[in-house]
Image 1 (cartoon, rainbow over the protein chains, first blue to last red):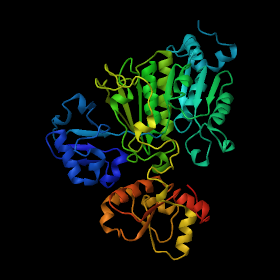
Image 2: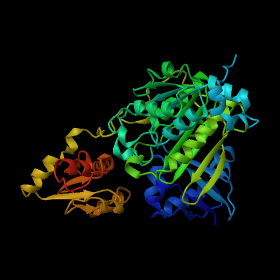
Image 3: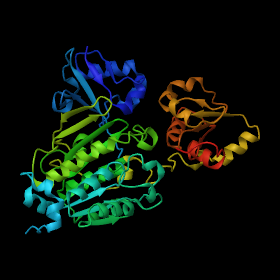
Image 4: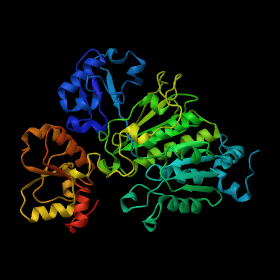
Length: 90
Length: 384
C-alpha cells in the first residue's frame, strides 16, 4: 500500500507518526483513506465542500501532483506521497 | 567598473581568491554587491554573519524587535551583552566587528507594503529570514514585482526548507503556496519550538545561494525546494514549476502592486498576542488569581503539549493539548466556567475559538498564558 509522509506541523493529528500507510489507487483515494483514519486532519486539509485547500501541496516522488494528473494521479503500492507544508518560522 | 581590493582585503579574502570560481574578479563583484536581509533572528543571524565575512559590500538589515534571552539559543549574531538592544543595532555592531570594511544599513521598523519598495530599492538580492506568513508573501510579491531573487528559508522544530524564488527564471513562492494556511494551523517557533542549530543549517544554505547568485556561479535552487530533516539527517528535493495561474507571476496577474498582507493572511497584525476573538474573552492572571482565591469553581484547561508541564504548571489544571481538544469537547461541561491557557495565550486563543464555535459561552482565555501567570502571580514559576 502507498505511504504518506507527514511533516511535523501536522503529526500531532497522526498521534505523532511520521508516515502512515494509506489505501487507494489514486491520490484522491489515498487522501480520503488518510482522513478516514485520522478525522481530526480533515478540517485542516479540506475546505467546507471537501476540496483540498490550496496550501496543501502533495508530491509524488519529486513531482507536485498538480504537475501530474492532480488528485487523479495513479498510485502504486510502493509509491511515497509527501505533504509539503507551509512553514513560516525563521 | 568593479572596485579594487586593498592589500588588507586581498589578505582577508585569500581563501576565496584561491578558488577559480571566485578569484579576484569574483571578490570584487562581492565588494560591489548588496543584499537585504529581512529579519535578524534565527535565519538572519547566520546569513548576515556569512555575507559580512564573505565581503558582500553592502548589507541591509530589517527588524523591529529587541534582543531577548530566549533568542540566544539560535540567534547567534546577538550575544548576552546585547540583551534589550535593538536587534538591528546589535547585529550591525557584530557584523562591523567581523568586517569593518563593509557598509551595514539598518531599518528598525516592520517591513510593510508602505516601506518595502523604498527599503529594498538599493539591494540586488532579498533574503527572506522572517518568521511570519504576511512578511513572506510581501517579500515574494515585492521580489516578483521588482524582478529580484527571493532567497527563501523557513524552519519548524527539526525541519527546514530552502529555495530561490526568482520569477524571471522559475516559480515564485505563490506558485507553490497560492494561499497561506489558516491562522493557527502552523504554530510559530515561539509556540512549537525549534532546534537552535536548524536555522543555522538553513541560513547557511540561504547565504550560499546568495553568494552564488551574486557571483553568477553554480546551479541555484531556482525550481527546486530543499527539504531538510535534522532528525533523519536527510536532504531531499522536490521540483517546483511555475504555476500558470499564479496571481502574481503568472501571465495574467491579479496582484500588480503590494497589498495588505495581514488581511491576506487573516492575521490581526504585528502583535501576536492580540486576540482576534476580542478582549471580552480574556482574563488576566491577576483576575484569575482573585477568582480562584474567592473560591469560584473554575475548570482550568492547559492546552500545551504534555512535555511542557515539566517546565511550569498551574495546580488543578487539566491538560488537554490543543490537537486533542476537538476530540474531547463531548467530555467538557459547557455549564461550567472554563479558563483556557497555554504558554503565551496564542494556542489557548485558538482553543477558545474552537470552544466558542462549538457553542461554549462560559469560556475565557488567560491573557499572556502561563508566562503571564509566572510574571504576575506565581513568581516561583519560570518564564520560557
